Length: 590
Image (cartoon, rainbow, N blue to C red; front, side):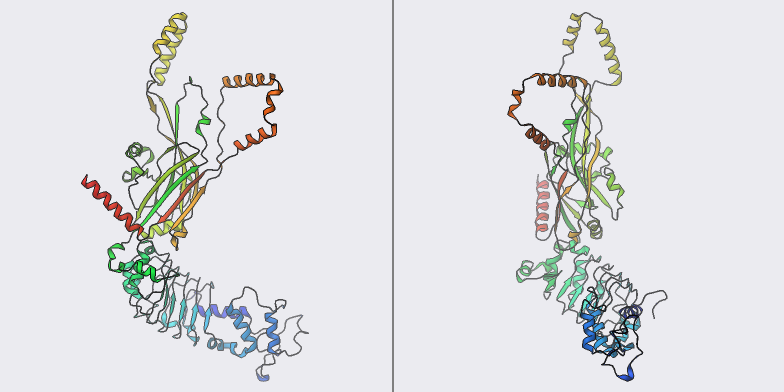
């Protein structure tokens, strides 16, 4: 019996039959159907305005045409399923077969998708010939196998909330050939023990995609008992991130023909021959390489620094870097980071709140990106940054970093949510070391005193003050985010191993540079001088051409960054691992 307040499969099926209206014209056992026996005719059930259309009896062929003709008011919807069409046509050609409980004895396939079903109740046993049961996109968390028809060959439970297979395996249908459990809540290794030949002796196809299975070695040891298994889908599980995932499965399950909807050819199987005998290569960890390429569209900071040489303004130095989020885990040393870079960023640990174990990459605690702070985090992530580069029309970040993720479930959540990429400007103000507010006041007093002295003594004083450039003192860096965007990484959950994109942050609107009064006066004089010149000097360029060239020069360029993330697969990951081991050995030797 179904639990109170729970939508059972039987109740949903009855509601579905009422929606189809199998007893209404032109279907059912009405007087309009000549094929019906006189003793089994039901009272005339016609709708207002249909009296003339149903006064005479019609042949089943004529009634069937009313369902198939698109111009008929009783035509089937273009979006109706093959099951809807079958039942409607059966209600015309043989209406007695879908009358009452007899419909349970006719159906061999039942498709109840997105009907709000929460429980497979014992009423399903009325389907005495049912071979295919599709229950995708419902709210089923548990299935009691005793309520499933023994004739069942296909059971599809995709997109439900199944988290435990114990009830399903208590009395499973012995002839089941396909079991679909994709997009559910199965977590290993507690569920692996239910995927053996003891429960599914005739299983040919198994879909476990997009669950939270993590134990590749344990799962394979159980699946190897399924002698008839030919089709297996495991993509979207955390264990699919393991570099040797596909090769290890192929070599461990030699009878497998299709893995993750991709045919296994003899050449591919030969490539991974012998991998099953090396389980140490299938450790539960993933290797991910992040690459940041060229950055374009950064406004020229020198345009905002139109200051006189003799002014007392500080020296402004700007550098730019890219930050991105990655799931918490281990990370390998980046060869592109030099010792000078490490030392520079190590001095900024306090201000940036950089983790001590990742100073070379300026790993932060996610405090530099306001937009990222506003996004809800479904997983724990850290922020990494490329080394700072000075301004250029095209800034080549040349950044490559390999991450090792041992928390595969956390990596899956991270990839499903995507990563946040930001462009950050670092501005440093540098002042002369011997200039401070007190010293400035003393210097100003001396200047006022010197102004009262004769010109000869003032010139002598100036010569004494001509000294080499002073040492500069730098203020703490000022960080500002120029742009932030989210990069979608869901393709890495399926069959893709690489996501490459160009992050477009749009055109940056910069403030106009301050203009001092002295240059303005010079410009006014120059413009007056130009106006006095004869017009013959301007014959070299057309006015429209000059305006066009000026417009082209001022055309804004959007801020863009090349970003890519790659999941390393065997043998690439093995090569990277061997290179890492060789580097460690060389360091020890030195």
